[in-house]
Length: 507
Ligand code: GLN
Image: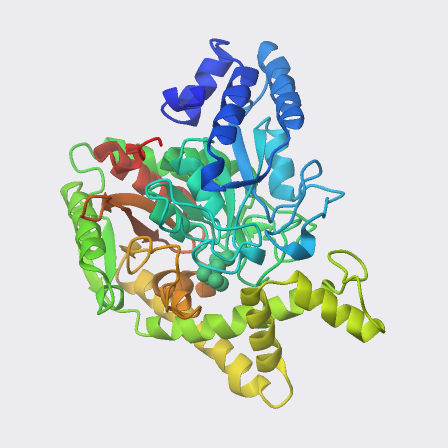
């Protein structure tokens, strides 16, 4: 077990680093050994011990001078869709198998500036398209709770690495659930912030109007430590927000809101969440939700009631339409974003071809895997002349209706919305007779939030039955820019429960 696991979260580890009772180098070396010992998970795609240890040494020098931040020397890792200068950036695709970026993504740069030590790059679904990390060109990731089931996706390597204790935190991206869903299926915590609060600069693009980066960690408090650093306006991302409801979009915003909410909770005494109205959408508890998931989520809601919150029955009537709307909009944006991989400028180029057209088409059909090709086909079709109005425009209208459902609930009925993240616990890696689009249906509870651009997090709230119990996640959705408050609510829950402290058996 790497040494960072002896510490109860980033703050505790930071205190030990600052007191010099442990060094960043010891932490990094221990974590690198653990990563090497867990290749069975296939969570890491690229490691470079020299680079990692050099970062750790730099962190130690800062710490020795009494400088640095709370993240200085903390071991973490990045989903392989974040551009990184030292490590390859492949998006888990054969198309980018040898690509090394000349620059760092803003998220990566901010974490490096804060002194965090990167252990390398994490496996994911190819171009972040998928829900089980089965679509990686470099093989599936295994769930640390049971190697025969998926870790979730697309940030499956990130969630598996945190769950297995290889890193304290990891970055992920969420286009339609890819931070929340793998966090739920691996029994760890993850947050997708409001669209536009974290820079997309240097993140391999999938669906540009949906993509957001967010951290995965064991504790909600650790999510705060990472998210507060990576969020903030970035002039290099045209959709990055300068302000959030009048407050500058800058580090400190989320922490400030978290502190205010936590103080209020502390002052409320025995019922810290007194007055909190939890909207429970009828549509999230309909047929298709497995009994063990429903039971764990209901148990979590009872915990919140014991803390003073109350449940309010609400309706998000267009929930079922999130799947068709998302699976038109996301592929449409993907087909446009992935146009750049033509074998000319970068990425895979076919070896044999007759003319330019054949070079492009062969390079693309060889470089992309089946799910990516499927999305490109769907996307190109729905954007084509004659179908644009019928599909793409219609999907955009539905997207507005879904956002309006949430807006109505938050303005009239509730402060936060809670429900399941996924309809079932993690499913077998072997697909069997299952169609590849079966996965799409399991995104039902996460897609609406993404289409609306809202923040939401997932925290562990229980386990399924049977001899190999698998984790269940609780989704907490808030209004725009409420990340700090959501994290404070999650933190309160984690002070009362210990689901987030459960760890899978080591092999
Ligand atoms: N499962 C969804 C998809 O396959 C979401 C993926 C994501 O959030 N990156 O598109």
